[in-house]
Length: 352
Image (cartoon, rainbow, N blue to C red):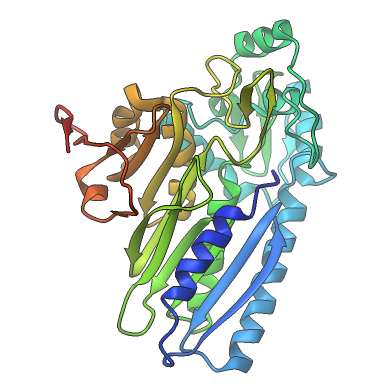
């Protein structure tokens, strides 16, 4: 799992706390680190003892998934990656099985802009380390991996076995496992009687229910300032995910190189500062935020249509906000608001 700054999570926590000033219902919260980021779980309307028991279960669940799906520390995923280049059928650990089919499906829908098969590229850039040095990869090595074109569709699944037709495939579920985990944790909380909850992992979250008589208030981080760009109110069941070029990266000669790699070029994606997506499924929102960031201002609408995403906010390299009508109806920008363009997924964009 990749390490991420906790700033986005703390900004959102501040808004959540702002929505929790009423004396009733009681909101309990626990923070912990897992999957390389700050995780915060908020539960409304439960007795303190019951909330503590659920917190323990959620924290243990995150820790176990971190151990199982880690992309560079010894794990079932690392062992699978060592075996895949042989091209032979290898056993698929049961803890990885649930990730495979949805990851393949979402990769195809995104035209492979969400691509968990590019683990070798991510490692080449040095992002398979908690602490990495500012160093550019060998351009020839980048070109070689891009030419190999590893994709999720290079994998063949046969029950409890898997093989790869492409020896360049190396799996890294960092752009998907967090969302998948949030979905699983929320469903587990529901089974245990929690109807009103927010599980926030590094600023990405899924929220169910409400905070008493009002929705949960969710902040969107400004990609170029230590403040909130805007706010969205969420009630019922919805996920909010943001991919940004500020999360992990380094600078060389005044240029920033971030961790969101464009599979088509092998270099950090350009054109976007951040992308925020709303969707019921956290796993879908997680994958879509990455794919739309890579797609950039020119192609994000087509990819959003293919992935079934209706609510999108993209901040482009110049700081302009591109919004779908569904997102424009939901977000409230802080002052000063960015220049905005509302872009229906099947219409000509119009300035706002």
